[in-house]
Length: 69
Image (cartoon, rainbow, N blue to C red):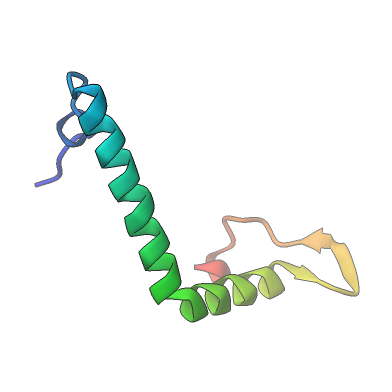
């Protein structure tokens, strides 16, 4: 079962709770990026290299190319 965005982020959340939630999510994202930094950079570097030929950068593969998945 998948929760909708309304269930995850209720509209009637008090201001202090919204600030706390936002800060928590930012901290969580920062911790995730810090923990998986090498894997994330390796993945993005690989994808970037696959997207274009440095000798002919004007010839880019379309983003929906199945080889990029």
